[in-house]
Length: 540
Image (cartoon, rainbow, N blue to C red):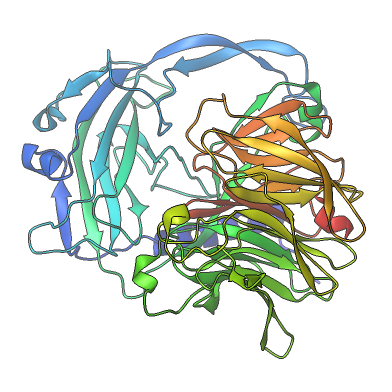
């Protein structure tokens, strides 16, 4: 057998990635475009260009250790400031630029870097074109190189040339910045300009040749899988134990984009793929095996005549029972169902004491088959004020040997839930801006709960998001979708660290062959992040 050299295989795979990445960007004549170097164009998208030079600064780092990672002794190296790619970066004190002056030479020349930032809003119309549902492509060319951040994210795939990263000497950058657009949708663009060649700093400056948004009406609109592309990630470490969870050179990869809102993932070991919900699109998607994306189930949560009134009519949480049957929380239908092996559907719970459930959200099975699920009112069009609401409370339920019972009424927005590894405790997170807390309950054999105690309080933490998804690893650590990112808490209630990714992760699931890959459902995207520890799903 003739084996190709490793370098040849790597180059071949990189070439495939480049081709796939290029194919995911629409080409040809655009249906409409907006010139961002004109006053009219910037006004149409309600934008404003802002500019800043950068400074090179000294910083501390670590030498490469035996593992090739930054685990050696401390050293000194260089960085630059400001780091302005983040979507929430405050550029309010930067220089405001007239769009017609982008060709003016900026920076101090020679070895120089600079930032251009603009927030754009998708208009209602562009001439006679309605951009709703279209795909937006940002196109620009800087003298001499550029990298482009979109909504705080810098994607880069092996072998990638152009798009978000440098494409060549004074070459253009062209990349998708939004799919399935909605008028009023905001997109944040941050362009990092680089004077080059870097090895021989030139006697010139940085400037923008052109910048425009092109809109395409694609033949097959909707979410797409992309070649797994690394994106920026920050790990805030507050305890040495965090180093045993995620390494010093953390990685996160974007797998698919263009969703309305991703939620409720579950890994299917028998088949090696991930299922996850888009409750806004009323769809369950399947990712894998490999890197394929497909629709698994349409009308995943509702098909009523009044569906237009619902913000999230579709399915939310997904789970597998001991026989591998998919269990689905259906928002719009206000029930929990199970898909049987023959394709039929069994309703597990839809009413309590004759009254319809609110909108089942998240769920988890105990090893004996007892099902626990949360039932907030998020899936109702008017939430707690909706006239369709029948139950006078939002609660946590268990289904034990066919008996549905309410086991907690403590929270206004019960959301994510998970067991401790030994199943002695159940953790429940609360989605409430005024009470961002996690309770821990002792679990009884009959499926009831005792002693709901405050486990952790994030109410005072900065950040807009309340608490959403919650998972537990084999060591008993909790992973919580909280303000500002993915919080990691020890079983003793200590905040070990926070993983900050470009798009806020609302739910997640362990998967992969070794069970140490955490799949993240983060707003419009799907991501994966390798960790050093696995989830309790693998043990089950």
